[in-house]
Length: 365
Ligand code: SF4
Image (cartoon, rainbow, N blue to C red):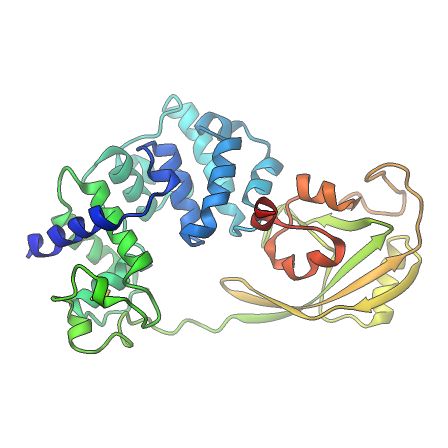
């Protein structure tokens, strides 16, 4: 049975693997960075982020020593900013405890902040050829389809069970390729949402879900609790070419990033004027913008945005302090925002109104 599964999978991988920048060598740092980025975004979208990140922070040492805002700026648009913060904590541990070299053992990798079973398995097998496996939602989808298993793939117990099963068949000498083959199959052939390209699959002749015509039912996922919905008002307050942004609190959602001033609930035009005046600005006009929705893993923001044009108050220098404006607010030009102030993609719908381009789109310009 093992050979029946492993041999065609590896043969397919040898023929079909994509050329990806993090596969050029078996550098554990590059593999780690790519795996963390790939947890949230597709391969094609990750490439420019990966290139830029590696160019700025080419090794564990540079990541350990990076300024937080440089780090967040490099991650802008990828979301889940705690992941990159944890990477930095892990890099510092690697510098202190492992002389700057990533540990190769799965168990040691697991002790590093932000490295869970999947990433530890990926780094240990791909970079160090250890007999480990990397099980994520893609792998669970493929395996449950192959075996027509109806267990809830969100169950941690089931995930552990699949890990145990795969550990029995991971082929020594090609453990990294085995894991990458599963990842590649999930990304390019055994696609989610009932749209797999079974005719291209190395397991076409043995896949139980396909043969039983149950691709719509498997993988099975128990329904999650519905996300909560929050109403927000976002102010794009402009003084000439400059826009007001503020730093979010150091804890909680989008911690430490910058935002256009955002308030709970949907404010009336009168309330918006009062908020601007409270910050020391005279309002010339308020223009309502199209609404936007941003979906986080556990909540949704339904946002109404307003362009608030205020009277020029004549600061001569970029971000010059103003007595009335609280210190966490900054009045900044688009160029400065793009270069130095990480803005989360939750606000992407509003950035064109203040001529700011975020993250990935900026590299592709
Ligand atoms: S045959 Fe189809 S459903 Fe089965 S593993 Fe291959 S791509 Fe997935």
